[in-house]
Length: 154
Image 1: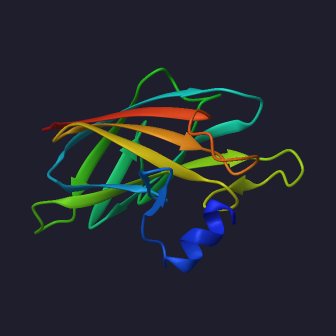
Image 2: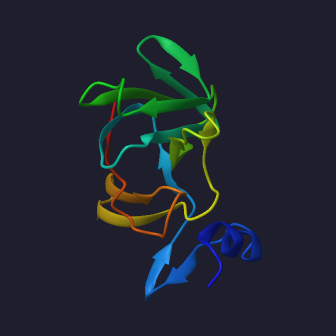
């Protein structure tokens, strides 16, 4: 069986099926008006892990720093990261994409969307989701990182 990364290439980035479960590369929360996204992460194993997060149609602000994209690491992030979400002027909403990231000691750089990286998504409500991530090294396990993400409208 090929790894998840190869299967995502074959599917052109669309979610794939693994053992009867749908596995996406990333999760998109949309449409989101202005508000606050709260992210809580828990990692297992020895890899440095976290989530990548990006905005389409707006801007994210973390700890006073504005950007369209951030990397949040379990080793350095507080228990709950609060991200201000703001659509571009003239727009009512934006979309936010979240995916798992890790650093592998062999390469030292941030890795994502390769080998056996993927997510299981549990939609808890219209504004809350739990993401169970499989980092790239080893087989797909979906217990390497758990991210609970909730959105609160401003």
